[in-house]
View 1 (tube, rainbow, N blue to C red):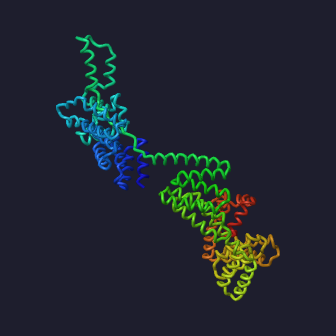
View 2 (view 1 turned 90 degrees about the vertical axis):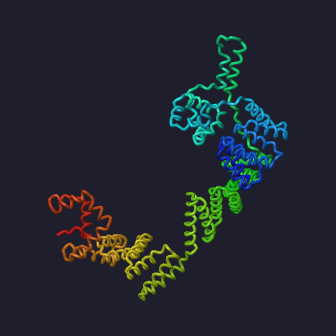
View 3 (view 1 turned 135 degrees about the horizontal axis):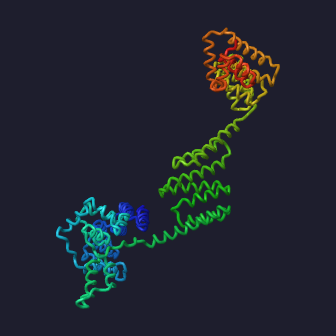
Amino acid sequence: MADEAKAKGNAAFSAGRFEEAARHFTDAIALAPENHVLYSNRSAALASVHRYSEALADAEKTVELKPDWAKGYSRLGAAHLGLGDAASAVAAYEKGLALDPSNEGLKAGLADAKKAAAAPPRRPPPGGPDGIGQMFQGPELWTKIASDPTTRAYLEQPDFMQMLREVQRNPSSLNMYLSDPRMMQVLGLMLNIKIQRPEASESSQSSPPPPPSSQDQQQERPETKAREAEPEPEPKPEPMEVTDEEKERKERKSAALKEKEAGNAAYKKKDFETAIQHYTKAMELDDEDISYLTNRAAVYIEMGKYDECIKDCDKAVERGRELRADFKMISRALTRKGTALVKLAKTSKDYDIAIETYQKALTEHRNPDTLKKLNEAERAKKELEQQEYYDPKLADEEREKGNELFKEQKYPDAVKHYTEALRRNPKDPRVYSNRAACYTKLGAMPEGLKDAEKCIELDPTFSKGYTRKGAIQFFMKEYDKAMETYQAGLKHDPNNPELLDGVKRCIEQINKANRGDLSQEEIQERQNKAMQDPEIQNILTDPIMRQVLIDLQENPRASQEHLKNPGVMQKIQKLVSAGIVQMR
């Protein structure tokens, strides 16, 4: 994987992210410590951020590993020059040119080094270099730089800010950065002197000269000033060393991306055969990008070639693991495999592997689309299971067994057979009615009520559903609800004796409460149950109904007007039936 780390370092270097590039080259060196190109590249990255001491160490390691490689001496010369050792830089560049006389980079570096060596040394101020460096420690540094229009823009340049911080940490390192015109400008600002830059010297040559004592002296002065003010050339970062194999690899990747784009365009046009050809060509050019496989798998789904899709997805997952690809890409491959498996499913068991595949995809990356597909697959599996288990004949046999056990008062066993009958035929209202009767005998009122309501839902004309539901509500002392249930059943079967008897019993209980024949405990119990009814709660919280109730107690004349309103009368009757209001 050293090549992968090296490629990342080269990309970061090309983008100007030198610190990041150095980190990637360090990772590569850990995997391939004898690769001289990696040390050379890291030396260039470090030199680009003025870490010349470290760059020198890497350059020396490069030369040690590959003494006959001219590029190593180029790195060595650049590091020496960055450290201000022009003589050593000249020697390094000359050794490199001895190996490769036509190397333009070495020639340019040698010229810069000789120019730096020929420049007269700067005379340090009385305080010495460290003394000048101490000037950068004070808080007024940032104020002066920000307030001066010629230096204000430097504060927005990351490399310059890094140089300043380095000088603040180590004042003696100032000499390393004096070759930078910006640092010279800031130094002049701190010393309250104007340091002339090369551009200023050149402009002084074109300006009218003052009266000279001799013409030779006038021509010599600007040349001398320009030479003294000219900074030492800073080594420029050289391009990364790229082998022929890497060049070919980049070309193949570029060609593969073009094939992918062509495949995408064909896919949008529903030209699936052409899309397959382009994705296949892209895979041949670059086997390190699994998106070509997943894209081709998507085309196979559209074409109905689900087995080919599954094969491509399996390859993508396997190759993605090898390349340590993004989890999202692996999740995409697994999701498309799951989709193909769902398309191939014929039985409920066929959905098991599809559901498992979707679950694996979600462990890689929790994608909402994958989660939706998983839920749909689970729902389809359940529906298919019900269809496979559906058998009305066996359902009738189970129902008859349940009836026999009910007659023998073996209610739990009867419930088991009724439940099995519903699994075989979930649309039979008779089974729900019978099981509701069992639950009533067992005292499981909520379960019985639920079955009775399901019975009515499946067949609204089936009287037994209403009698079961009404009986459960009556047993729960919800007489108003029970009466509503019995009355609803009578609409379909007006002469049903059970429904008529149920209405009669409900009226008796409601009138009994109105006459005050109930004990205080029974009244309180009825009211507590009624207060749990959302409909009763809505009536009692209605501002209009609250005023009506107040008028019933305090203003009988006004209450008579209220009772003429059918809606109000219906709500009053509801409260009376529930035991909340008593009419005497």
